[in-house]
Image 1 (cartoon, rainbow, N blue to C red):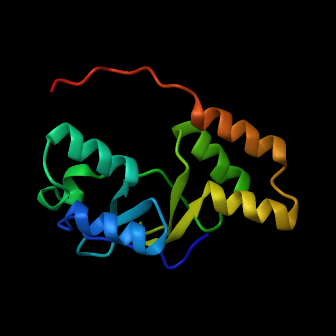
Image 2: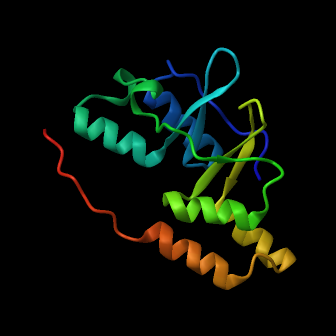
Length: 146
């Protein structure tokens, strides 16, 4: 798990979010509301989709307009296997780690899990490959109106 995670606010523009991603070598930024609770997440993919479908510059789109919600997260007490299962189920590569009150504690990525597996020998490589196969499976695509 990466903690503390870099975060942004709902009103942060996508240019600032992209710079945060670049500066911290990440592709996932949790969006935290005024009360400190996690309200969404924004990925590098979300930025690409938002800017191209809206035909606007990133500085003219807020994180709130592009963030993914509902949030798929895990608890600090969840096992690595449980985190992998959630990633596979929702076809995502990163999870916010939140406490029981919904406050962000960190981020766990597929990369974190693979590196930990090298050190600890768990989860098993077959479990990681199974999760990757689920994450990378093609989705049915609904055309968008432009």
